[in-house]
Amino acid sequence: MVSLAATPAAGDPSIASKQAEAQGVMDQVQQLDASLEHAVEAYNFATVKLNKVRADLKANHAQLQVAKQSLGRAQEALAARLVSLYQSDGQNDSLSVLLGASSLDDLVNRYNTANRISAQDTHVLGEVTRYDKQVKAQEARLKHAKAEAAALVQQRAAERASIQGQLASRRALLSSIQGEIAHLKAQEAARQAELRRELAARVAAQQQQAPAQAIASTVSPVSPSGDSGGNGGAGVVGPAPPPTHSSVVAIAERYLGVPYRWGGASPSGFDCSGLVMYVYGQVGVSLPHSSYSQYGMGSPVSRSDLQPGDLVFFDGLGHVGIYVGGNSFIHAPHTGDVVKISSISGWYASTYVGARRI
Image (cartoon, rainbow, N blue to C red; front, side, top):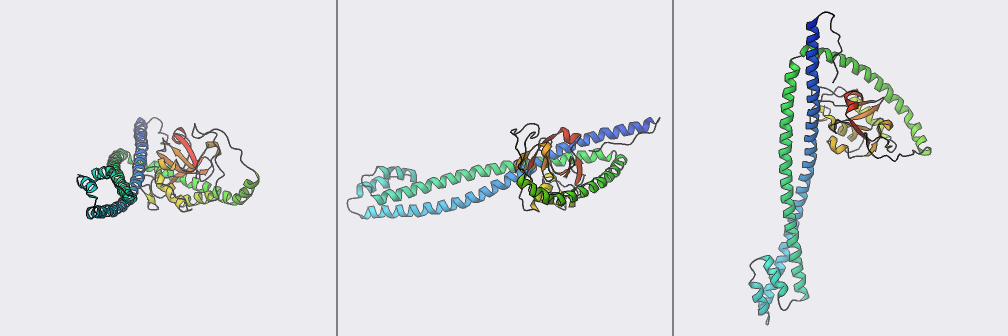
């Protein structure tokens, strides 16, 4: 969040008081924005998990149907064998034991203790037992998956309600300082224009250097560090950035100015992880729509080894962006804002978590 930069006129306490009030409101809005990002990414993470559970449900249902069909065929074979026993001479002792069964499990147990069981009988019984266990196991998995899906649906509903409530609070706060907001937007627009010019020049230079770097990387191996975590991946040297990284930055640059929209993952509107997912999708890399899930992708990279195209994470993994070089990154910050370039300084530096190279 950009701080108010205007200096109050000397000797005018009303202006100073108004600006102090506006700054206090903006501080509250910034705290709301951070909370909102966590809620949005929690919602996204729950959606990712729900989609997986639903896919598992579909697969489990199909497997259950196969198991039931197999059990049905095995039971038909067992029934045919019982008829054969009934019609055969000298088999009445075994048949009387089997016909006294009260359930399938009881039948299996009685069958095991019958006097005369041939190899064919053993095979038929084994098939019934195996498919019966499969059916029961699949039914248990389905029951668990359905309960998990129901819990995730409730979680998403709670996150949605939290987001909507916080958005209402945010709108109410901002409506009290409309004049100051207009001034801040003008300042930010000018700053973004300058940052765009700097980024365009940096991307052009990177694209010119890419062929030479690719050649150099074949003869100059990187010496990896032994540190594997801590301080946002301090000391972690990731693999060399793939050639697609320069394209990632150029693609992300196209969407500067696109409005933030929670749950958004298209040029009509992005949230933070939706922007990352969409941009990487343009170079053929599939990423989940969740900053928490994205942090599990690729390889860790230390902050000192950041390269354009790396993913940078903030605020307990509640926010993610794409590093563009020059200690800056492109991201979709929060509701009411647009895709923009920010520096890893101030709040972003203080909440920096780490980086991943995809």
